[in-house]
Structure formats: C-alpha cells, structure tokens
Length: 378
Image 1 (cartoon, rainbow, N blue to C red):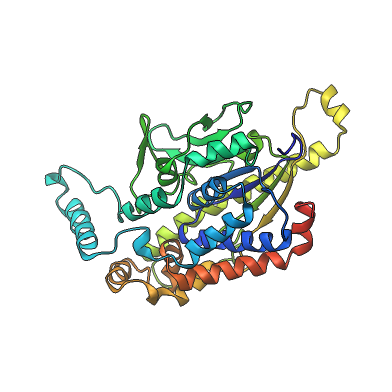
Image 2 (image 1 turned 60 degrees about the vertical axis):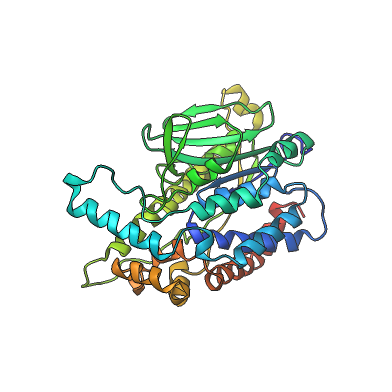
C-alpha cells in the first residue's frame, strides 16, 4: 500500500465526449511506465464524464495497464446509441414534449426532464463495471480513495461522494461537502447529467446534476482525500482565444456551448491559480515555521495536461458521423454550424471524434515526457 505522504491523485474533469482526450493521456502514461506493476494514482477524483473514467480506473485499479486498455477499447468504439437514445420514437417524443411545454405550458402537467434520454448509458455502465470491486481494491491496498462530484439542484451544494479507506473523514466547506458512499451507477449518472441535456438523478433525498456546475474548487476533493501531488487532465483548453468581430446573432447551440465551457473550464482555471498562490506562500515557510504558526496547509505538487488544440474544431470535422435524425435535431439549434460546434463536441460519441481526441491526448502527453516522468517519479 502507498504510504501517507506519497499519494498521487488523478483529477479528471468533465466534458461529455471530450473526456476521450483523458484516455489518450492515460495511454501515454501507461507507455511511459512500461511494465511497472501497481496503480500510480491511489486517489482518483472525477467529475462528469471524468467521473465515469475515474470509476472505471478504480474498478480495475489492481492492474493499471489493463484498466487503460479497457478504457481505450470502449472509447475508441463508442457510438452515440450507447450513451443516449437516437431512435425516431425518442427524438420525436423529445421534440413534441418540448414543443408542447413551450407553446401549451398552461395545459401541460409535467415539464420535459431533458433533451436526451441516457438510458443506454445506464445499461452500459451496469454491464461493464463491477462496482463492488472498488471496495475490494481499497481493502487490498490497490486504491486509497475514489470520489465523484455531483451538484445538488435543491441545496446548490457541490457534493463529492467518496469511497475510501476507513481513516478518511467527511468534510464540509462553504457550498462544498464530502460524503462517504458506496459508489454505484446512480452516482456516475448524476455526475454526468449535463444540464438540460440529460435527466437529473435522485440520490437519497435530492436530485443531482452534472458535478461541474457550481464546483468552486475542482481540485479540493483530492486534497481532502490526502493527495500530496495531483495530476489534472482537462477536457478543454484553459486559455481561449481573444475576442473576434462578429455580426451574426449567436445561435442556441452557441450560447449553450459557451455556458457549458464556462461550467467545465472557468472554475478549474481559477482553482489552479488559487493553488499556485497557496503553494508560493506556504513554500516560503519551513515545516517548522508552519507548525509554529498553526498553519495546516502544505505544498501540493501539480501537473496539468490539457488539449493543445480546440476540441470544438475537431468536432466540426466529424459532425456528419452522427445519425441523420440527430443531425436534423441539432441543426435546428445551430449545433451543426461552425459556431455551434462547441455544443456538438460534448455530444459526439462517435469513433472518428473520440479516436482523434485519444490521439491528441497521447501526443500532448508524450510532448511533455520529462514533466510527466518527473511527476510519476519514473
């Protein structure tokens, strides 16, 4: 078992189909590690689709190389039908329900729950993941902790559900809570329930949606779980281009894509800046000085890997790989146009797109080989 003070955490952020990029990064890490046994990340933290990837790594944490191979196979062969329904009955039904709610709201007793039905994802997760293996991995020392974060629609709190070694204690901060739980399929559906796109999930007494919403400190769960160094794998560029002149009014897809990017990227960038400032301040003091001053903070080593290219641009190249009826639905909100491709990139679970992102993640990681090997102590 990894000893206290030597625990590395892996933080996987959200992003729908964009999370394929994370798998490419993991594939490069597997290659750099060679045949080394064990799990390099005893603490796994994920949000949204990153939470699903984190849970898969936890289930197979006894063999990191095998875990990455399984993730690679799934993401390289993804189709939208495995994540959400694209059959005519489902899509026409969605259109009718939303149309009725908008035009005949006074006569409609039940409002639509979501734009898409992710029942196929529910079945897929239940089929490929043995959630009881998480507890066994913790008992065997292959894993120290797993957390997945969801956002409570009633409380407004960012709740990190965690399954961990017995000494890990729950925590509560302003709008942030860590709660011990047996991680199951409902937690993964909750953390990945993109607002308006997928339905909220009820856990205990509250409905939860995508964990990136109102997540003020995405790195915080890893620190609370005892990490001393953290690898963060993003699913979008943290530095976007500046303003450009435009005369066209933004489409619904462009507005939705902008909102999703704000949810998934902005809080991570702010949290990384905050951690860097804390590290600078704490690093200027010796451990003895910090103890004498009653400062419980400690320096946290971090490494961030994020896409070197715009993922929405890559998504635009693969837009025609979606089923025809789904393309028609998305065309109506502007997602099939260039400026709407950000929204498209969250929904494009098709091999052409996911394989391109896996390749990008792999190349981006190998391009920073020295930093990665230093972080992994290779």
